[in-house]
Amino acid sequence: MSTDTAAPLPFAPLAGIRVLDMSKVLAGPMCGQYLADLGASVIKVEPCDGGDDTRGWPPIIGEDGAVFLSANRNKRSIAVDLKTEAGREVVMRLLDDSDVLLESYRKGAMERLGLGHEALRARYPRLIYASISGFGRTGPLSPLPGYDVMTQAFSGIMGVTGEKGGPPVRAAFSPLDQTTGIWAALGILAALRERDATGQGRYLEVSLYETAMAFMGYTAQIYWETGRRPQRCGSGHESLCPYQVFPAADGDILIAVGNDRLWRSFCDVAGLAQIKDDPRFRTNADRVAHFDETVARVAACTRNKPVAEWTRLLGAAGVPNSPIHSLDEVLAMPHTAERGIVMDYEHAAYGPMKTMAMPVTFDAAPRRVGLPPPQLGEHTAEILAGLGYEATEVERLNREGVVRIHAGAVEPRNVCQRGPVTPTTVGAVAADPEEP
Image (cartoon, rainbow, N blue to C red; front, side, top):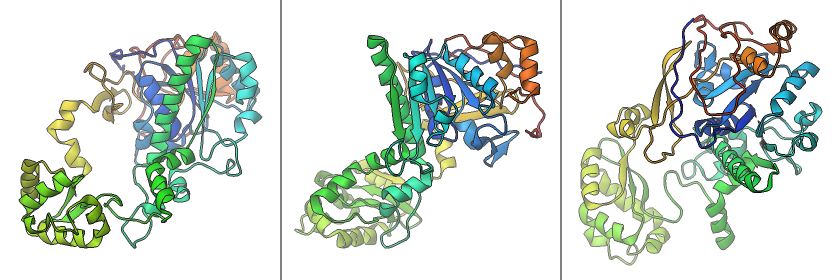
């Protein structure tokens, strides 16, 4: 059995806060992970049969998918069958000493389990109950499932994403899921701050739909002012020009002329001095009014030099620009290493791993992983022991399928104490995934 000697988190303002993370996939888990990064004790409550869906999303390392590994560090996992009375009792006992419940079940599911916010409020008046959904818990669309790609299509985001005249395009990195998790964390922090003053909990909602609509904020404002339906404009911008990707002699380069001063600088370095004061191009409003002509003039110029030369010339002139990098190129850059946004850690089952840090630093403190993403039910026995369950009772619950204990889990110890993530021991497992 191997051990993981994780270091305490260097900055833990949420030490003493316990979060029950009953969410799955990406939005809720990202929220829980950020709270854990800030020192909260986060217990991930998962179904016994397979756990979080993303554990099975390829590519899979051992028992867990890469998406799962990206969104569940600094948590402990307990696997519980909530359809059983004994399983629900486990959750209720966890709630006795919890501050936050985070869930992302379909509408009505938590209520059917007796875990809806109204049922819990009387028993746990200080509890902050955070509900994540696709379209909110009220309204005619509230029964719909919440998938990032579906909400991108529904909200109008795909209507403005893609090349001009081309088909709709999905934003590939699931921005609605990830940002909904951030909004949930922000709401929870506000509710915790309020509770410091009032002693009362809150019920808060976030949804992928409202995250999408918030993303469409300035686009909607333009529509309200002009009455024109927004159109796809590729890498360009409907209010700025030139402000998009242009062809170079050996690839593509992004040029962002964000104001008229930059336009004049760009024209000087690009050999377009003859048009910088042309009435069609003098101001940004002029250029937007003559959008296609402006873009054509710039593109005819940029094709004459390679990307590296444009980067050098435009950089020296103070004109914002960038090559179109691939992810592997950015990960290998010295700046990425210097900023510490990529964290290295050791997973007892999977060996050396990497993960993206929460993109906030506090007084330049280094960011570290306290605990690796847990395997399904890795801490079930430990958590139950901390709740006062006897070893024989834990064995019975496991045997009856009420809980699931991971085969590589260590002997029980009390991990239900409040506080930041601290060093722990996890068990090694076989390289091949286990059957559920």
